[in-house]
Image (tube, rainbow, N blue to C red; front, side, top):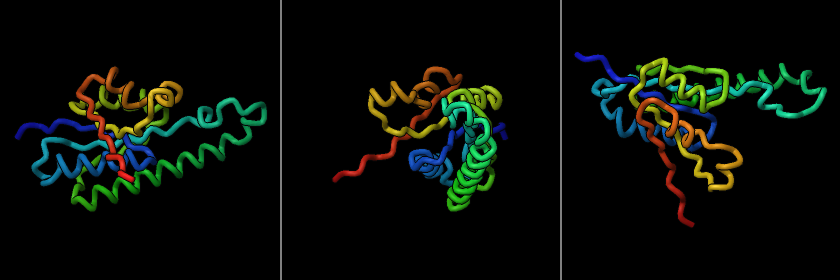
Length: 158
């Protein structure tokens, strides 16, 4: 049997991210043993310095607390991702937490794993918010050396 291709899925603590994970499980892992992909879930843990930003001279004192919180968030993200995979009977999944900016972390994971697909959720930001905050999905679509699937959560009708 040929070796399976790697599918990297970027996950964070957003509903959009978990929706994307559920979506790919429902579409590509209906029969987990028959899927053409090995699944790698990657969470980019921000550096404490980026979480603090320009907080001033006393900021260095809160670094350990910020880092501890970021580690707790990462653990929760991985736990929830494991639960989602387990609920769909997908047990052959690898999980990684990598420190750094999500854009770079995901593109580097694609390179390192020779992935054939990168999956990211879309937060659905408008043009102004995307310009200010930056878009991980937009960056990855332009810089990842594989196909990039951007999974959008359907908007609720009022």
